[in-house]
Length: 268
Image (tube, rainbow, N blue to C red; front, side, top):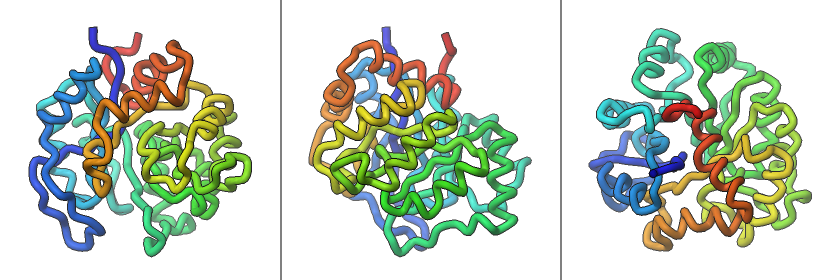
């Protein structure tokens, strides 16, 4: 029986970037390829994250989700002007969160003193959605405390992209560990190749201790934009076993945590 979910993947049948995109994928990433990878690892579904190069144009993601079932969910990108009516329609279509891709230092961080952004975050809380944050670890202190204080559920991409080999020496990573006690912060165990730190096992151990397995999920980051050809899907799946030694913890991170966070499948 298939168990577990890939909680971070991108699917796009064609490559048509929008104006202002900061990259262009090397090739399409069709749904059938990702699902073949899921089957090869005996996974039953997962979470599709809006590709950054498509910006706020979520139509293709919604079209794909419409043909999938309860084992699949989506995360969109939205402007701060998005209203509650539109967001409720997205919720009914299987959307469970919004991603802020703030990677690359030239990108300005949202002004959380802006009433429109405050209203946007309030709407996330009304819907029970999360805010997914993709940001360099040494920039987390610039925005994480204010977001945490606001009370929105936060999902941190790619282990928080730590910049220091010692978790205790990394100011941004320490924020994630300290936030663990409040139960509103989740971290994706994914994409270690996007961090400048070579060995992230100490960081995973620290996350497991501080946040618990209940606040950790795994993602393949398929199709690994800008890092294509460096590893296989099976590699990304096997990394979890290298990070988390206990089999029961791994099963929980693959199955129970995604069910709770993303409303995937039937919660046992």
